[in-house]
Image (cartoon, one colour):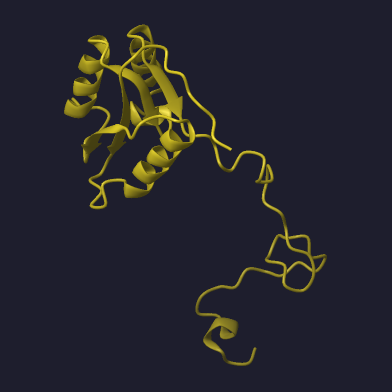
Length: 155
């Protein structure tokens, strides 16, 4: 099923990615996910703005370029894996999102693929193979490195 996303304003689709420290693969998996999400939404392939190896505490040249284009009305939709790419500080990330939206651009995050398919807490194993602390009624002490059990000698 293909959903169609109708941008708030005419213009290009953009994808913004930031990674710190430097990622030699240039966030290829995130980029593929954003491109696939754009396709599912019926959007054109995004123009990529990548600040690779740049901390969110430093000036980010590609983010500045994206913001300038959005302010000119040239960007209709910005795809991001999460608003954390703008900054690890939530207030700063929110202000970037607010600026983009006030410039007429929609900010679209990747859907959380784990939501609904993952239990809220880890499941414990039952039976003889349960790890220490699991639901196994027989509590096993943790193995200490250098102990006879680890070294393979009889206890």
